[in-house]
Length: 264
Image (tube, rainbow, N blue to C red; front, side, top):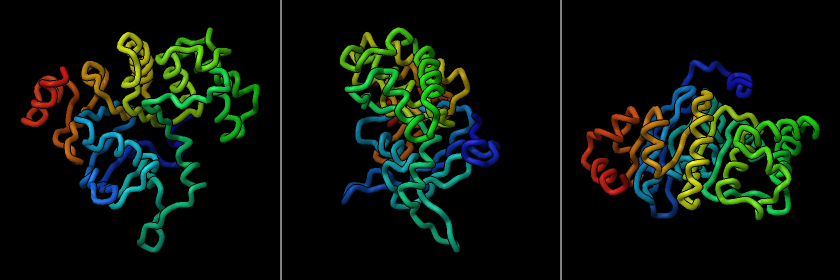
């Protein structure tokens, strides 16, 4: 299912366009005029210190956080707002939920239903949200489990899975909705070091398949080798943004160099 089928617009537009976005929590200015565009099929990585606004920006892309100013569009459609008579009006929660169907998100924590098996966790959204027939949803779920290397864990409960396996189920669950865009919020940060590789391998395969991805990560090797672009954020702004290998290996900004010197 293509992005233009999901969202009803041409794919010649940027997959994601973030235009001068501001977001505050009380007196704390978390995003201060952030702008960036993500092309169709691009893997865009957001790096930077904790508190720099990376995760907040990601959550704004699918309107889990409401922006204070600016615009965010996915394939040309404003996210969370409609324009009427030259003014923006916030959409009803029901309509925002429909927009999110085409945007998959994987969080730091796996958020699986503990009382459902891996297969049942994946089947839930396609049947309840998309209205997919149970048989078709089960077939899709098994296909996605195979893609993340967990065909043999279909009947396992989250408590019977390692953290890395749970995160791979969470990825499969997001993919079962057939999104046009995938958002990853530090998907390996809660994992033991020896489990990180399996999750990154799944993400690498997803990137190679042409999925458009925005990834908040502390894995600099992944950002350099899999990312097309890297944006370094600090203090709620994008300090440096460009080709992934260029930014990671030869950053131009002193603040970027100082950060990378500590995390490599």
